[in-house]
Amino acid sequence: MARLLRPLFRGTTYTRLLHLWVPMLVVSVWALIDDGSLWVPAAVLIPIGFVPAVRTGEGVQARLLLSPGHEDSAFSVAPSATWRDRLRTVAWLELRMVLGGLTTVACVWLPVLTVELVRLALGQRTGGIPVLRDAEPHWGYALLALLPLLALYGAVVVLGVLAAAGARALLGPSTAERVAALEERTEQLLERTRIARELHDSIGHALTVAVVQAGAARAADSPDFTERALTVIEETGRAALEDLERVLGVLREAERPVSARPTLTDADRLLESARASGATVDAEVTGPLETVPGPVSREGYRILQEALTNVLRHAGTVPTRVRVEVVDGALSLAVRNPLPDGRAGAGRGSGLRGIRERAALLGGRAHTGPDGAGDWLVRVELPLG
Image (cartoon, rainbow, N blue to C red; front, top):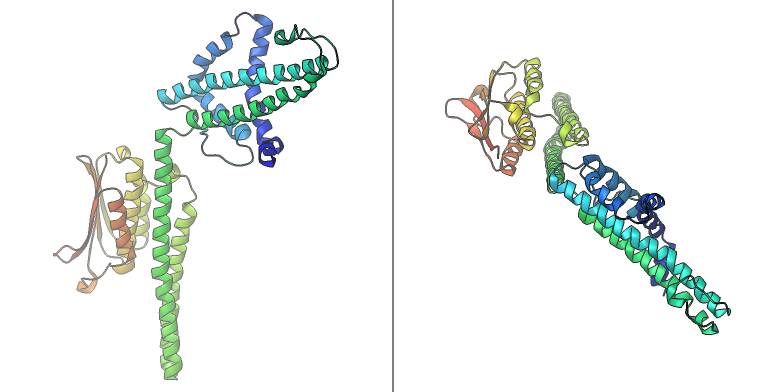
């Protein structure tokens, strides 16, 4: 019994009731004008539903009244972007009108029925409801007086649940909105994975070096060795702090919406940053970067950022060639730099793993390593479709 009465004490029950009453205000006003054509408000809703902003308004109302107290992403607040969205909005407006009409009938006539049953039980005749017009007064009607109120309670709860379910089905995110949300979630997970990996590599390396050097200095008991150990610890710590600052910058940026994050059209600032560090960067961009899809362009920017960072970190301020090309339905990125002192292993690290992972996520391929001519090459191909 307590479970059946639980909705009676929930605010959601009454906010949903209010939500269903709202369209009936328009019907009530129209009834004062022409009570013989109550279908007119429902017909007017059809062109209104095709207005893109109406979907936003209905979504906001659904969040506030059908699911109050918490943010419910099941109700979209974006304006209609396609004809499918507009048709779904029209269907929702008509469904809301029907449910509102049923709610109004229940809220008006069921209490009236209770009153008439009480009057019959008290010995008074009634004419308010046709069903009871010819009924003879009898005390037994008092036993039936609560049934309409129970029916009203059940109708309010059930119609509210139907309204919430209908709103989720018709005002829920469209396919395009779901894809955009999945894209944003994927990018956030990708950033977090990369951040965790870089923090593990950078900070873990710095702490390991510090612990080993400190232990060796204590065991050697030599002022000269201690001085050298402290120098190594200081240099390693400074490098780790720089890495940490860069990674935290990415973490702060992860709170920005996807549309506000940098794309390849912002690549100039990466190139200028590398040049400001002392490197000579020869850059060539071919093809319309502005036509590259958002996810590919954003990941391309990150790949270029990782490649340039890798050059500065492992090769220093060496001449670097950057090629960005959009052709034949693909985005091609290439960063080439000479290997310092002929070290074939220069440039290995978590950044290159991140480049390969980003390329694989988008269905592309990446090559990182010596090119056989004394240079280190990062080449990435990403499909546009």
